Image (cartoon, rainbow, N blue to C red; front, side, top):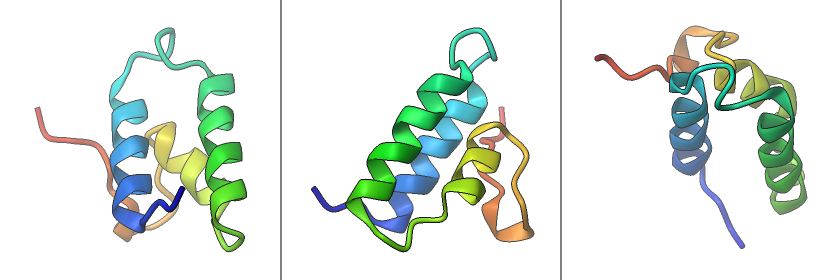
Length: 66
């Protein structure tokens, strides 16, 4: 399986847009584990922050406008 940056961003956005009760931390961590196995340079902390809706820098603005 090969994910690209756009896949990580799209999935992080999806998780960030869900209510906290619908996307518990263990689901975010499960995705992070999968991506880390897929790509050795995957930035787990950056993804988890984006998936929680708190991006670590301006490039990681993942929330969709409603």
